[in-house]
Length: 506
View 1 (cartoon, rainbow, N blue to C red):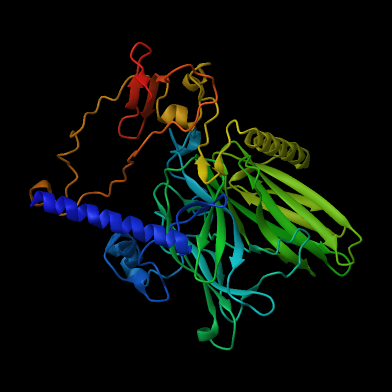
View 2 (tube, rainbow, N blue to C red):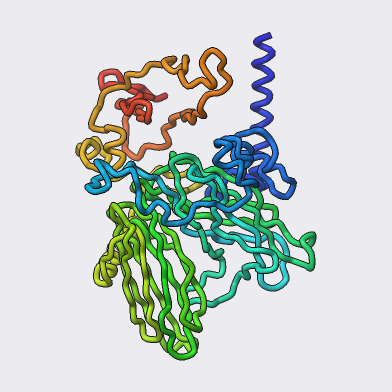
């Protein structure tokens, strides 16, 4: 009987593998790397068109229906399709100061997600004239699992692709008025989307661009942008994002105080946390004094937030760049502001949670970011520590100061050195089955119905890809390959051989 059950399970696994291969072949919900771009895995039963995202009893459905959260805190707010109730700057005056708020030295580390861009990758449907996009793209996090909109347009007010209003317009970029507040990434983040292409007089004539939801794990490499392609029935959208460690929420408010002449085109974008990819905040035409929408950007503590302004007059006779920089600090409930006079306009930029540096510092920081971007591009070109996808295989990003040969892995004071206690080279003290008798039973251990959700990693294989050195005879490997996690940040060995007892390949 056990043998029949095993054979049945194996048949099911093989059937799922064939189905996944067929899905990748058809390009419908492929996950992995194709053409150098990773495909996002769209969750099953996550479509809005058939209502499946609001039904079911899996983790996703319970989040959307509020059952994963206290009834008195969320259920009373009604539909889980409502927008987030938390505003930006609600966390600008934190209460978790150590040792206390009057002599704050440190806060608990905050993981935040920053979305750098949404980009229309391709359209497979035939559309006459400009593309009119409507629908929404939203994020749900552990702070408040209601929709935090990144993009939200109605059918009567669609975004028209290809309108060249700004200085640096990219006709494939989808504007991001959101998020409404910073995106917490202490736990998994759900990204939900339902975007259509307006095509006729009624909704029945419209094309479904993308529809569903994806999960972004908190267990990704920090402070580095990665891109995923979300594929739908009639095209695809690329999302570029990063997980930032020890980050704070910066709120940027820009006021146009004076406008001379007939107006001007304005492109406003930012660089954050010394990451070379830019975030487009605004791209359009300004005809009169106004306040732009409030922008929210995540910034790693002790790194700059740089704002870049590019202005062109309507007649194209003037091109004026300007920049200012701010630096994240412990508390940010005081306003920092700077006025830029850029020929045809005066711009007042105000920032919360960050400290003021001034224009000279901004130019210096911008030069540093551009230099780091050039160095990274050179490193990828040489293939020394390239991260990303080449030949269909993703390259791992090796952390700076993580070599054993020069001892740099045992020094340093950044997050991963301290959190994983890398200077301690001992083996983990926890044995298998130590957690087989859990203590977090609900309602209690004598009538256990549920445990807290556990995320676990499974390593399936280690494989020698290639050797560039000339080796006579069989390859003798020694050394170690180990994992450190939050349960016990000591080495949990996957492979461990001494020089006197190497593993002989082949």
